[in-house]
Image (tube, rainbow, N blue to C red):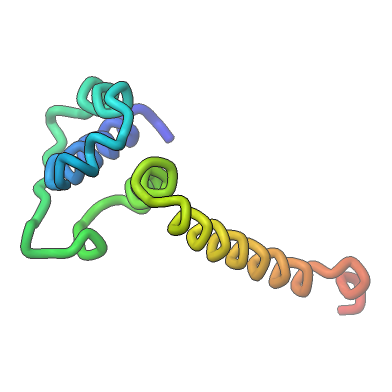
Length: 111
């Protein structure tokens, strides 16, 4: 990621956080929120559309990834974290299984 991309992500994150309830925003460390404001690119505009869900917002995939991380680390309860981690590790396990089948060293030279 280059600095321009990071600056744009900071704008999107700042815009999203600005539309969240303060009790949630306050769970995210103030240093992180301050850093987002410092590195955001002033020439890039992101307008959060209140008529759309977060999933419908036009944001970069990397912004979505960072939001998932912020949710897991700061916003969800321990029970939610456990559910999130189980789903995440199941997904990773399935991806690894697909790779094992595709790149099986016992079958790689058969074709």
